[in-house]
Image 1 (cartoon, rainbow, N blue to C red):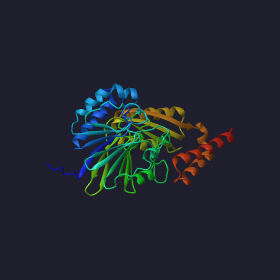
Image 2: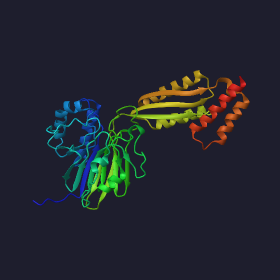
Image 3: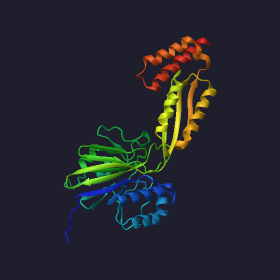
Image 4: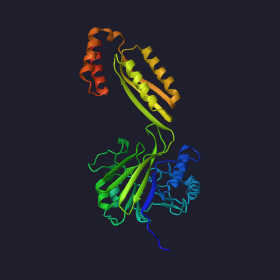
Length: 365
């Protein structure tokens, strides 16, 4: 039989599960994602590091993962170690007959249909260039590079990640260009889904598929990656996993405008209602209300929004200046600051008001 090349090859990209146990939400999310991959007619699953939270978890859950993967016979799994499970994959340990652990040093290369896959395992206190130095992949075939680390954009800034990920197995854009990479499947950044397309290279962080802590803000996602080999096009789509997630919102209140602002905040949050969302709201700024009124506002928001979200936590860092704002001169100062600084961000306008009101309070004592 003639082996007819596939013109479209589809992967689901995910990672950073940090599995520790079976039958918890992380495990259930993994099962959901694999079912989604199968339903999407994907041929492969790219797991870009930290499938497990530790080497011990990798050892304890190996048989369970093997059984799970082998239930999805139409999928082929490609896994690289991350910083947490770097030492979790032993040479002779199998994670399924349809699973490839890309753990060779400095990298593992393999063919999959009409693509080349290259996995670079995480190495502490190294840079990706240490593994890719001198490598020049076959530019006649698309090359998928799996990496777990911090990507620098072409301007060498950290637009892709938060400060806590800084300089952890650094990946430089120029190294991707020199190596002949077509698509970089990246792990290590939990907080968000990011795609960059430049210099005929596409790079993607899919983010963690479940919230690992309250800092993983917003709906969780995976990437559906489609290679149209015949026309040389790559399409990357974000797919939400549908589980619970955290959402943090921060609002600044303005003296004498609080009632209108609270109504607007309430309406905005109601429009974002989601039974999967754990909402955390912080109210900041300056209020013309007394402290007891502030607490009442906090309680009303909590009560009204509770039916629209999985959970609601309202907190405030509002500053009340008591009767000071009843002084006509002080009230006029506040109005002038607001009127003349419409284009200023609420945060900086609040700082201006705070300094002025503190000066008034001290001068009028």
